[in-house]
Every structure is written in structure tokens, then in C-alpha cells.
Length: 156
Ligand SMILES: Nc1ncnc2c1ncn2[C@@H]1O[C@H](COP(=O)(O)OP(=O)(O)OP(=O)(O)O)[C@@H](O)[C@H]1O
Ligand SMILES: [Mg+2]
Image (cartoon, rainbow, N blue to C red; front, side, top):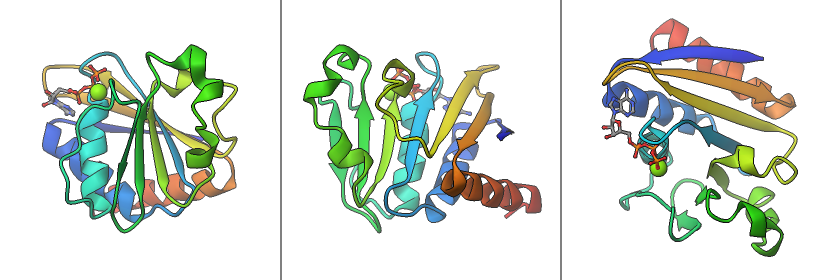
């Protein structure tokens, strides 16, 4: 199932992510896709806020995995530079752990991502406008997709 949302400001993107965060449970997996500057890190900052993370969230490009404490642990990863070494990174420990995983460029490691997952594709449509395509696969993620869509349609 795929849902589409449009965000006309950075704040709108982050408010959506914050709302989504409130629906998440341990073990949930989010793949983030989109070109440079599409808003993947911006989105993750909103998600972190929604999980009650107090620290500043920035791009994990050079660290690969960053872990933040919140209502649930947040594992923020960027596999862009390490897709070919993914077998050695021990990612499964995070993917099937007690936190929420957000993986930028997860499409580069298709054989390693959990079956049940949400994929968020951000597309730049204007300076401040982003189309957000949310694809949900599996029972758990389908449930979250349905809930966030209802929240947004209801305007809360
Ligand atoms: N509606 C919007 N949603 C998200 N970001 C927006 C929006 N409008 C403008 N922006 C701006 O676009 C930029 C997005 O940058 P960000 O670092 O989040 O992208 P990224 O996808 O993580 O890029 P990279 O692949 O380089 O890591 C920010 O400067 C942000 O302020
Ligand atoms: Mg980024």
C-alpha cells in the first residue's frame, strides 16, 4: 500500500515525522529515500523529536550508525558509503532490536532490510515543497500506514 502526502515547509515535514514517531513501536523499520537535499535528515530530526530525543540529530554519513535515547531508542543510519560492506556491520542487531531504525539509502542494501518495513520517499517539488510517498509492506507497517494516513486526513 502506498500513501502520498505533500509538505510545503520544513516545519510541515517535521510535524508529520513527529506524528509518525508517536505511532512507532520497538522493531519498526523506516527506509528513507530521496536525492541530496530532499529532506531525509530533516525528516529524521522531526521523528527524533516525536520519540522524545533531546539531542541534536545530524547526518550520520560519516559515522554510519548513530544511536539516540528517547521513548524508544532511535538508530539512525546512512548506508550510502558502506553498502558493499554491509555484511560486516552487524546491522541485524539494530534492525531486529528494541528501537526504531531509520536508514537513509536503504535501497542500496535490498537483501538486508526487514520484510516488514515502511519506505519514505521524499521528492523535491519546489524550494520548500516535498512530495512524500509512504510505502508500507507487512502487517505491522501497514497498520502504521493506515493510522498516520487517518491522522493526517483528520487534520490532527
Ligand atoms: N518541505 C521541506 N521538507 C524538508 N526539507 C525542506 C523542506 N523545504 C525546504 N527544506 C530544506 O531542504 C534541506 C533538506 O536537507 P537534508 O539535509 O534534510 O536532506 P537529505 O535528504 O538528508 O540530504 P543528503 O542526502 O545530502 O543527506 C534543508 O535545508 C531543509 O531546510
Ligand atoms: Mg542527510
